[in-house]
Image (tube, rainbow, N blue to C red; front, top):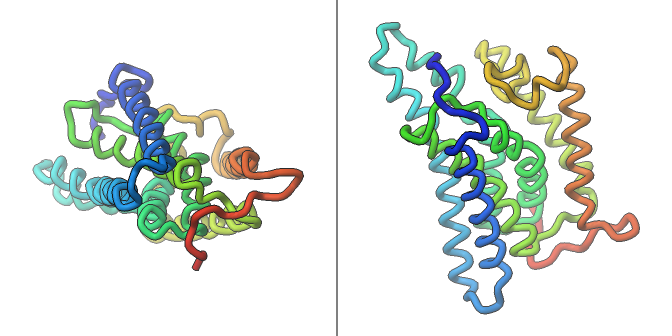
Length: 250
C-alpha cells in the first residue's frame, strides 16, 4: 500500500470540510426557499444524486488505473475486489441518498439521514484516505463523503422530509442487516468491508472503541446513540413530527 500523503486535519482536509459545510448550507437554503422553482430544486437534487453515484463508481475504476501497471501480477484486480467494491456503509448510504434525492420517499430519506450523519460523518472527519488533493482519489472521496451529509441535510432540513414514527427501530434493523450481509461477504471474499473484520490501517475513531471483536459492540452503541440524538429535533413529548412534503414510502 502507498505511504500516506494525506494529512488528517491538514490544509486539504479542512478545505474539504469547509466546502462540505458551505454546500450543505446552500442546498438547505435552495430546498427551503419559496422563491426557487420546484423544477430548479429537483435539478439540483438530481445533480447531487448523480455526483454521489459517480463518486461510488469511481473507486474501483481509480483503484484499477492506479495499480494496473504494478509488477505484482493481479494486484490491481485483488485490490479492487478486496477494497474498492461498493460494500462500505458510505457506499451504500450514497446510493440510498441518490434514490432519496430523486424519489423523495421518506423511508429512503430517514435511513440515509441516520446512516449519513451518524456514519459517513466519521469518514469525513477521520478519513481512511491515503492520497492528497493532487490525485483524483482525493476528489472522489470527498465528493462522496461530503456529498452524503449535504444530501441528508438538504432532504431533512431543506425539503423537510422529516423522519416518521418508527424510524429508530427501522434504522437499527437495517443496520443489523447491513452488518450481517457484509460480514458474510467479507468471509467469502477474505476482505474487510465496513471495517467489520478489523480496524483500518490509519488512525480513526475505531481506535478508541476497543479491540476486535469488542469494538463492534461499542460501534453499535455509539451508532444507536447517535441515531437517537439525530432524531431528537423531530420529537415533541415522545412524538415524532409527521412527514412533510414526502411521497408515501414503499
